[in-house]
Image (cartoon, rainbow, N blue to C red; front, side, top):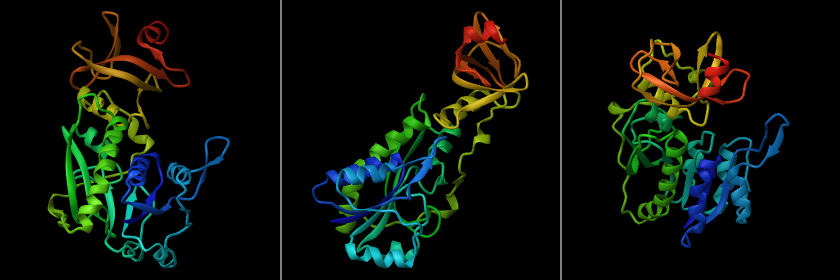
Length: 299
């Protein structure tokens, strides 16, 4: 079975690696976004997918744009499937129609719930107790393709977007090869999504990281904290400056909404409902410090 793999970031690499390890699957090409300069030094680094592909002698394609000409070019690979995992660009119908069987995407939610760019973060923001993996047929519309396979996953109470995304990626990677075989053999058939129950999530921005203890509950702040780890993190305004919350947990101690106080040698942040114990935080322009150092130097 021949596969053209489309993907760019680290989260796509478990899928590519699993396809490479499968003796019945031949990854004939890996399509990834062009390398870009990163960091202050603007050093050009290979994308994680490019790096893994080159380590396994897989041809790497990095087109500046994907259009009809690109679709014509990749026909030479005679692929059975396109597999698309966090590629980062829109694929036109001309490309989606190239493979013999289908173009497949793995989405990190229980579609049609949380179509869009941040399904993992949104599940945590909303305090969901479960999420999952959807193997779907790609379409031109955002995450609206027919569904081949869904697998539910419980969300742990201490889960962050980083740990949950890792779990989902590992699970999806394990599911992918057998799903491709079942699609090719006609065992799995695509089922249309229920558009009436669809919901959408937006791309996360730095400004989403602010928490407002005066108007948000402790549970809401904890959910945001979990959703925004490791990026962009969460912060609140203390004495006119940003203060990043590095390590927090629920507290039974009482403090007024928005008030940051010491209670029984603990640093407590009052919220709209209940309070938070702040164990590590980072005042603006400073390094992260624990609660005792903050109490002694900033409170």
